[in-house]
Image 1 (cartoon, helix red, strand yellow):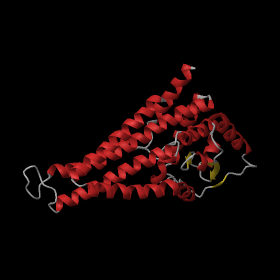
Image 2 (cartoon, one colour):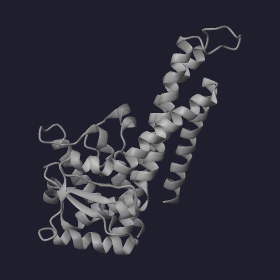
Image 3 (cartoon, helix red, strand yellow):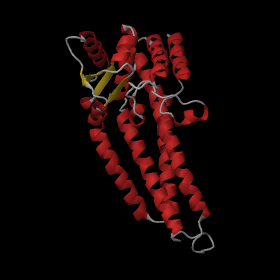
Image 4 (tube, helix red, strand yellow):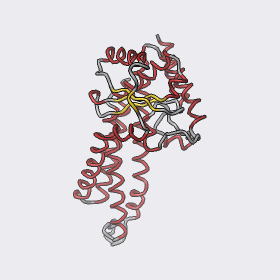
Length: 288
């Protein structure tokens, strides 16, 4: 757990370093501050209102407490063990087997489950998934994601400003000739890509952390591993189906990434490779 936390800190530090490096290339503090404030404003709004937007996007309805009393009991037990307040529980009527947590802090958290996941998992596996989602709440992953998104967005804005500055000759090369700055163009193109990769790496590290925390919370790493394996198989069947409601903009929220990214494209996934997640959980089980 410590290593995953340390990895997040290091990745955020690298991301911050890219931001200040771009500020250096731009050569002006005003542009740096303006871009950062604008990105802060955008992500502030997302931080406070994204939970309502994503629940509305998927047509989520409050989970029926009478019909799904067992789920409420599981969540209450897990919250008691983790010293968390009870989140709001939501139901999404889709065959896509998945779940997600959202909300800016433990006091304003929501956990949503789909009909597909209720049809696919047994009770122990579902308990493992709920523990994983509550771990995102406990670990403040929405806050971490917002900080990373703020910095990455600022880098994107500054890179765009830098490109315009080069186009209009506002960036000088080392000889002081107007219209220079090939290095600035290279930086402006590749810095946002690097920032995006770092942001996605942070997301993947938080998924590993949620797996580890969730496995400890439910005291059953193998149940969570089995759930992930089933959900991964189900996602491959439903990802191209017309009834699938997975949206790229909110795919990072789900416990299983709803789209298939193979090879080098996996670098652009918000989730680690499923095989590695399962392998880590199985290793945890062997240690106990």
